[in-house]
Length: 180
Image (tube, rainbow, N blue to C red):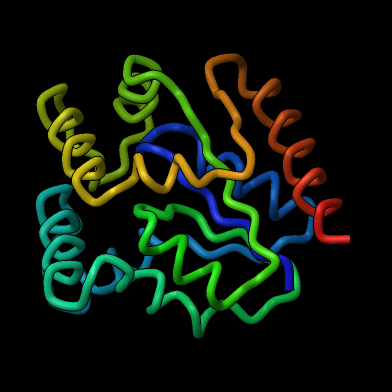
């Protein structure tokens, strides 16, 4: 099995990379969907505050790798991209279970990410600049910077959507070639 795991701050372009991956025949899993599902299961609205609280509570209760551990049973396809790794603990879980792992960092500046998030209208994004920076700080506390440091490849997403899609396709092809 070839597993590619993305790490990137909110609004960096992970969803766009998933679209490229799907067009290349990859199965995909969004770790954030696991958190949103748990939030819904508890009967809570999908707000930035509720999703953040559930994500943090579960990490405190079950450890920093809880979401990666919950993702494992869903990783059944030959070629998969898992979106949204948030810590080196999660990278460790994936490396332990999948020797053929490629960690892909996706970077975009805070200004670029905030503009994207303001326009995409997802209910858990947070509406204002303060909420944006609060979310960034929360993700940094979870260890996303440590996960970035473990990346096998990096994409910078500051240009056009077409440029990013081409770069993403090239990086995914590179990750696949490394497994041959």
